[in-house]
Each structure stands twice: as structure tokens, then as C-alpha cells.
Image 1 (spheres, helix red, strand yellow):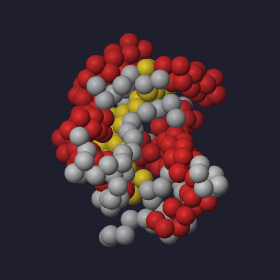
Image 2 (tube, one colour):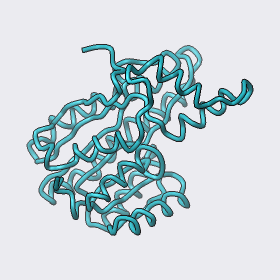
Image 3 (cartoon, rainbow, N blue to C red):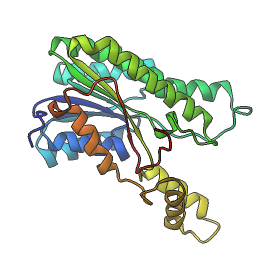
Length: 263
């Protein structure tokens, strides 16, 4: 199936590992040129070079913290200089949290707001003018099932991801007349390196059965009884970026192995 992505330019934030890297690889496999952004210069540049070699596309890695205005500005400038703009933006950068509402500091609330919400706002302002010049585009937001079905131990993550989901809806309404499709994806349990790292830490003093711990999490939360892979989720992102999803606008899609309990 030709997804119509060959020659398109895609920005993927948090693109050097996990879900972001899988999305970048999925888009590159369809012939899209790639700009991945992450804070670590060495890794993001190495992954971009590997993507270019593997898929025969142009790819650049930009070391930028999109949780800051200056980081977003640096990313937009690099993409403009290399490609003259972008056709696709995947807002993926983010991280989990662990706190209580009563104990979390203002600084922590602000840092997560900047990373999960203001990064998407600033990136939209940066890329949309170019998308309009190029005749349209696609913006996808990687939120979380926790935006609608929160986990008790990460209220800041829950709140900011919920705000990102609402921002996605508002942006979609504003841009649909310009040929720019905006959607949101709420993943469930996806086996990222962060999940593995956390599981190893939690089981280090009790025998180290991190795989068993992760299976217990899947058994508790996901009717499918397993974690999804970043590649499984990436397939869905790639489809939403494509011409085959041309009537998908302003929606939120749960990709969660049945984890969502509500209608």
C-alpha cells in the first residue's frame, strides 16, 4: 500500500529512543525525510545517521530541549535550514512522573507543563506557517491513556497529558481549513526503555525478575495481557500521517490493548 509519504519531511521530537525512534523509522521506511530531536547530541545524531543509511532518506538529528522556548526555536531553525520546512510534526517528547499533589513542587508542575503542553504549542506556531506554504500537513500528539484514565501515582503526568489532548482538539479545529490535519494518540502500555529501566530498579533487591514484574503490570491493566511494542504503535502513527487517513481530523485514538475501561 502506497501511503503517499515519499519525499515528505517529518519532525519527530523525543526521536532518539523508544516510541519516537520507532515512529521516525516507520516514516523513513515509507520514504519520508526525517528530523529527530532529543536532548542528547551524540545519540540523536547517531540515530539520524543510521536512519539515513538504512532507509536511503535524508535525516538529521538536532540536540534540543523542546521543553524550552530556545530549544523549540533551535529545532525549527535547523529544519528550515535543511529542508525548508516540514509536512509532518509528531509531538512525542515526554516522560512519566511520580509524586502526590500535596507534595509536588511548583517547579515540577511547571517543567512538565513546558514539556508536554508548551512544547506542542510552540512547535505548532513554528511549523504551521511553513505547512501552509507547502499546501498542508499533519500534526500528531502522543499523549497517553492516562489523559483519560489516570494512574494514581503520577498526577502531574495525568494532568499535563490531558491538557495536551485538549490542545490537540483545539488546534485541529483551528487548522482544518488550512489542510492541516491534527490528531492525538493515547497509547496504553508500550515497552519502552524507560519501562524496562524502571522494572529493573524496582526488582533489584527482590531477585531481579524485571520481566515478571512487567508481566504483572500487563496482567493487571491490559486485557491483551502484554505490553505493545514501539513498532506496533508506530504503525498507527505512520497511518495517521498518510493520505489513507485523510478524513481523520480532531480525534483521539486509544492504542492500548483494551486497557481503556470507558466507552
